[in-house]
Image (tube, rainbow, N blue to C red; front, side):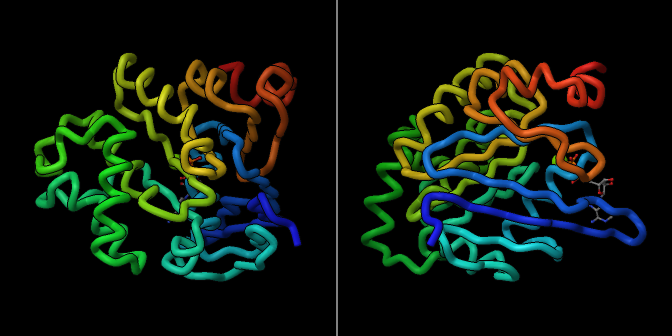
Length: 238
Ligand code: ADP
Ligand code: MG
């Protein structure tokens, strides 16, 4: 049994002639913040899609010692493997509260349990005062934050965020960073973040994993990865 980690090995994905991922390994540990970086088109989103059951792939996925290879998005999500999408996917006509509630109910929780959890989560994310606001009338930065809050409603073990700071201004990014830094401890989970903003990623992450052209390029602590010649060449150099 290997608890306390999500471990993917040998993940490959092909799109009609394009090898989007080529034998990539990834480990996300409970309590850590892992940054997944790489140039545009490197395969970052495809990897998140594969790990969360949205993308057909070869390779193996073992989560807390359980082989979850080939599981559906719903089953993975119920087992605690949660993700956000690069573009927000909220229910625009529902209130902030209802957006959180909907995820909880979708995971099979009862109304009463969801109510308590949703309240706690909105509190922690500083959004309690917006509970009854329709999602469609939220400012963009708050909308992004709600997109993260709702997937934590219960039982999140490994949380994968695809460009959570995209489109945020510097103040909003800083606020988000402050929340994300405390998230693994508050929700007892591992956190993986895809992010273009290196300033943010270097401050936030305990470890970095770099992919380029669908291949694993480097993995390790941020300072070391940043100095890795292959990484500088492929990514940081331009
Ligand atoms: P990243 O998130 O790192 O920018 P992606 O994972 O979105 O990169 O894409 C990796 C590669 O796979 C790109 O070349 C992209 O054009 C291609 N790709 C992604 N999704 C599809 C798809 N559904 N069909 C065909 N090609 C795709
Ligand atoms: Mg992407």
